[in-house]
Image (tube, rainbow, N blue to C red; front, side, top):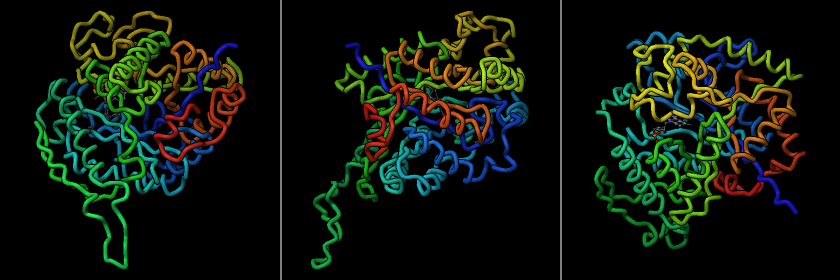
Length: 441
Ligand SMILES: Cc1cc2nc3c(=O)[nH]c(=O)nc-3n(C[C@H](O)[C@H](O)[C@H](O)COP(=O)(O)O)c2cc1C
């Protein structure tokens, strides 16, 4: 008998702001920020409930702490085109979402570049309690000059950034483990709230941080949140392999995704972890129509909403390099600027043709390099299956082109199709965010 095809994991990408991966989203004719304002919790509560109805592993908020002036040295393009700016803090939203959901994981991005690990450990342990073990922390190291400047930091090189990130997580882990599971006894008769022999100092003194501990938060359901990560370079992959329960990756082409998948899973196995304990979620922008031709019209309508300068502005910010300095017709793949090397797999079309600076920028404005799977519900499902079968497993991080409405459409049309084909769970099993990611589904 042929081995069963791998089940998929699904997560919903969100930003606490007006644009996600598509700069056209806020202008899209179906987006209705009048009825559902992007700066109100109701929109996200609605989305989280829809995603829970769809049995998703999680909703996942990206986060940046800057408005970029990278393109032409001006804030104007970022503000004009809303290049993931403004972006409100997603962390307070997680509590709002926890209050209206029961099963779905609730994840957000929090950088290790700006705060002390005690603060992060305390906040994430608290969120893990508030959500009954559904918290997920996307651990990022920040590489943007605008963000460094907002916190008044000098720019750190890649080695130092990741050395600091390793120590940051180690301190958090020690703090989360500073309370034993059974430290709280609440023995009223003998006046003992917590057993002091089960709570320890950590006495951490490292290269970057000092912390005495213990944490003043009791052990949380997952013993700290589930850890998510998104890194592209060797150092980033090594970090993800060591700590992550889930990885968000962007690979426009299935063949590159397969190489990435194999590399990460091999790194995980090399350090003695089970490769299945870390799920890799590939970014995907679904565009669903009533017919193939209708879907292509919707794709063209959406993509035409993105001006090339908007794409130049967001790509400049993500690369931390002013693309106005490059000839717009130069092929990105041939450029030698160090800043451009990280995102090389995004410089070709899905068919493999190398793209010019302005073509890559335009695509970046449309989807930040997420492949657009376009077609009827059946054909989008076929494309998802083909991608995962080429890659070898795990799942997708979905990103809508309008809101509200696109996520609902995916849940109503694609989820049942995946279930019919035996590629997605039919009920939640397990209680925590980590359970959902580990579950074979
Ligand atoms: C798919 C993806 C999503 C990311 N999302 C965020 C984010 O929301 N916020 C952020 O500050 N950095 C984000 N990053 C940046 C990474 O966390 C990391 O800092 C950056 O990729 C540099 O690490 P690297 O040198 O390993 O690539 C993202 C990176 C990738 C590849």
